[in-house]
Length: 59
Image 1 (cartoon, rainbow, N blue to C red):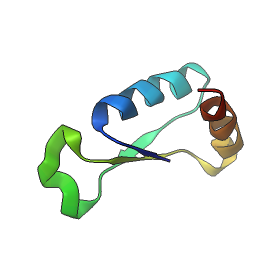
Image 2: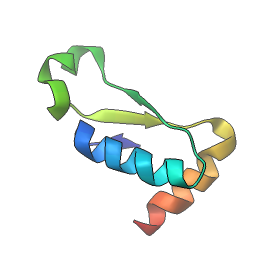
Image 3: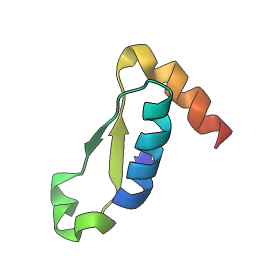
């Protein structure tokens, strides 16, 4: 999933973390100069993908 900015990504990470899903952020290298306003890719372990989709589907 891609979040529009770091603030939204942090919020989603907290939501997923509360359900026991670890999350990593990845910012595309060519967009790093945008700082906190750059789109952020949320990465979760393969074993928790279905849980993350279920949680984010409810949001």
